[in-house]
Amino acid sequence: MAVIGQKKEEGTPYTPTGFSQTSKSIIGKTVTIKGNISSKEAMEIHGKVQGNIDSEKSVEIKQGGEIKGNIKAQEVRIEGKVEGDIIAKTKTVITPQGHVSGKIVTDRLVIEEGAVFRGTVEMGGPIKTETKPQEGKNG
Image (cartoon, rainbow, N blue to C red; front, top):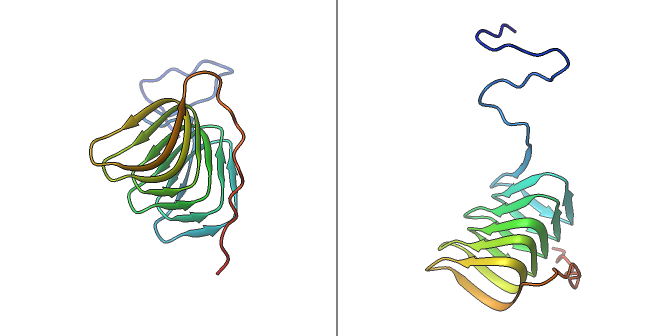
């Protein structure tokens, strides 16, 4: 591979311009997962998950995405549907297309006009990381 116009210093990894060193797991629209998911990277969910999601980074539930389970992450953004509890260490956002039923524990909460939220919220203070496990439905 030729690199023109960039000087690579010896001992440093090469990262082409326009590429990020962060990674993201993407669950496609046609994917259905029955079971728990644990990840050290950001997640983008377009499909369906029946189980709990635990990510060290952000979790985005895109439009058309459906979660029946609890979510624990650094930051959570909901454009789809979530039935379960959410623990977000820094921020939770529910967009106008988002529907959430459950408890939200977060430092900051944004509920945009048009969003649907049915449940309770705990904000401020230390984040409690315990949630009641929700069992996925078989069948």
